[in-house]
Length: 274
Ligand SMILES: Cc1cc2nc3c(=O)[nH]c(=O)nc-3n(C[C@H](O)[C@H](O)[C@H](O)COP(=O)(O)OP(=O)(O)OC[C@H]3O[C@@H](n4cnc5c(N)ncnc54)[C@H](O)[C@@H]3O)c2cc1C
Image (cartoon, rainbow, N blue to C red; front, side, top):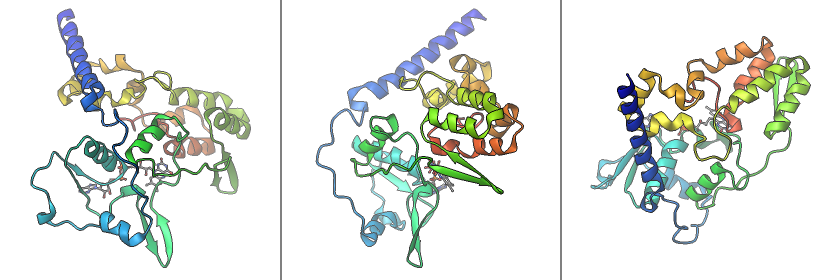
């Protein structure tokens, strides 16, 4: 029993060491050096953009030697492809739709522009991890506009609720609107922050199963060792709506706590992270 446990811990340490080495070694960090040239000019003209975003597939356009093929051109796929390209890898991005962008793409209809998904993104203040990553990936071309505060109003039947930005103001505004549910709101805020403190390098514990080799991830899950890494994995056995239902019987508050998590840059309590 102890020998198996020691072996597992040694293997896990080795895998974490390998991942850390690959991420931290100068050659493996695409952002170790400043960009080689000034940012390319931002292209806003539709026809010019479409030439890149709407390139139809043709076998003869596929370069002969590729380092990676990324399937899907959403924010995730393009971030991965862009990062690889920055370290000099030759990447092909394949998209099933007639336009790149996934949930971030826009389209025009009768002279109006529509977006299909993202309308706001949380935690984009100067110096935040997300902001630094996106600035690097886009050569600083992506511009951000601060939303007014309250940044959102949720209408549930005749009732209207305001959402405020910033963790403290957000919780305080909810408590004001649901005075009988203070304990539930505080517990929700506590649960949504489970893990190491913000700003520490290991905040994204839920990524561990994706970063280590697949066999090791399976082993960690099957043996239950994963629960020792972070309580977030124990929460992953419950869906977000189940977790919220355990906190409060108020249907409006349940709806609010369920709808908002993606725009907060936060992670849903429950199954979503895995
Ligand atoms: C209506 C809506 C509103 C949202 N609002 C916000 C918001 O305000 N703030 C926020 O932070 N998040 C928001 N989100 C969530 C956010 O948009 C997504 O989490 C994020 O864009 C997902 O990016 P992704 O790259 O993982 O996937 P996607 O953007 O879904 O991209 C996946 C891409 O892969 C392609 N694809 C899939 N399978 C294949 C295949 N076999 N071959 C080729 N291509 C394939 C798809 O066509 C798609 O283009 C919203 C989502 C929706 C739907």
